[in-house]
Image (cartoon, rainbow, N blue to C red; front, side):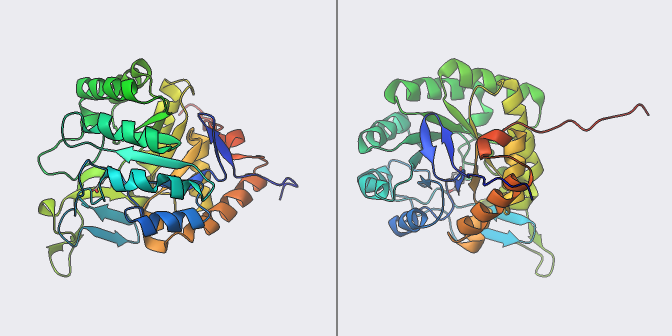
Amino acid sequence: MADIEASIATEICGVKFPSAVFNAAGAKDVSLEDLDALGQSEAGAIVIKTATKEFRAGNDLPRWHADGSGSLNSMGLPNLGYERYAAAVPRLKEHGKPVIASVSGIGEGDNELMLAAYDKAGVDMVEVNLSCPNIAGKGQLGYDYAASRKMLENCRRVTKLPMGVKLPPYFDRSQFEEMAAVLTETGADFVVTINSIGNALVIDPETEEKVIAPNGGLGGLGGGYVKPTALGNVHMFDQILGGKLPIIGVGGVAAGTDAFEHLLAGASAVGVGTALVNEGPAVFMRLNAELRTVLEEHGYAEPAAARGKLKDKPGTSA
Ligand code: DHB
């Protein structure tokens, strides 16, 4: 092992994180107890569940499934409503790590209203979620570039906080280029990628049933199933944006090496979803220790030193 002692701290948009590993919005972050547990854990930040203007109970149960390969969910945005979260921010800040709010308004003007309230409440950063796949009758805004542009222009007007954008996965270069232009032209400060891969289906062949109940059994795919897609999205955005926007990589982080791969691909930090739901907030103690070890083994003093250091595979002619 290289004889360096690596830090796992990082900085994004001037905000200091004690660890570059924290929860992805939506994982164990709905109740105030969940949020306090994240505060007490080794998570590098507290990311609050994507909020709507009003309380939502969410979709019918079962709405979450996990297996050895990953997860499928159709939660349906269960959340307390932004006012409860905003009121809790001063207390959450006492945990001594950044607090990040996430919003996904259902009605016109909802995001602007919530962002203004979160700004006042003292969160460190905000994430505009353009990619919830589980609201019946509501498409993912992130696949509509004109609508995304309009939404982000409106959001940019109401918050001076570092504003990130939570994106759905993309699969074609033209999609990355379209969204990268929207992000730079609307003044987004950071990127969060990927949200779950929408409209996936997991089947239990024993029972011949779908594994979740809502939305005809279709849901958002996460965990190990999506890691290569997540890494590809992190890398494509880092390349197309020329490394100018920090990226929080989400998708398939279940070990320190997974976090390391996200850093190599171009991320500055990583969000943990499926592994957090599976293991609870103690997962951060394990992931932090594993990330520290892998950074040291590879001679990187901190996560930022590994960012974008991915090497090409040398090729020879066939
Ligand atoms: C939900 C799922 C998402 O992937 C998301 O970005 C927001 C909300 C949900 O179903 O609750």
